[in-house]
Image 1 (cartoon, helix red, strand yellow):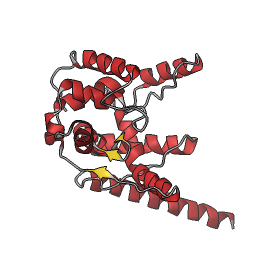
Image 2 (image 1 turned 45 degrees about the vertical axis):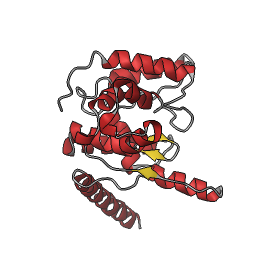
Image 3 (image 1 turned 135 degrees about the vertical axis):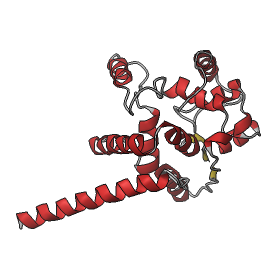
Image 4 (image 1 turned 180 degrees about the horizontal axis):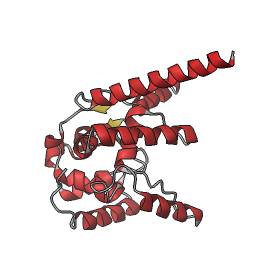
Length: 226
């Protein structure tokens, strides 16, 4: 009986590894049509009797302003182009900050956030964090930085029911993602910690301060070369 259980676990593990690698390879070339978070939001709204208008328009990275690419690096992951998926210094700083009772910080890189958004469910558990690390390694190896940034900017939540750069640019500024100015890009990046609470336009004083800080960091980021 025990042998059968271990054999089943072994087979299930091999199938999971094979399917996960296949899915990462597929999404290296194919646009991600929907994410687990999008489905969760839709289900939650359905249960609450609300209509969920999902705005999600995929655009290749060539059609997304470098300003937005710089803004999310400045806001979310300053070492994105240098690390291999994990920024252990940022994790350590986040841990110390949280221990001191300051505003909670996750220390997750853009690569980790992309892995979580595309392949996993929301929430905090050791299982999910372990799988997040696994998928982070896979996308770093198979996709590379440019594809990770492209998927990230097309998949993350940037407003209530708004997913991806193009939808966000249209929602907040009534323009294409390709035409976002530095200030506009900083406005979108500033709300990423909680895009359903904060606004990129007519922002609170807190978001205005974040915008200013992001722009200052952006000014020190040169041309992005993946």
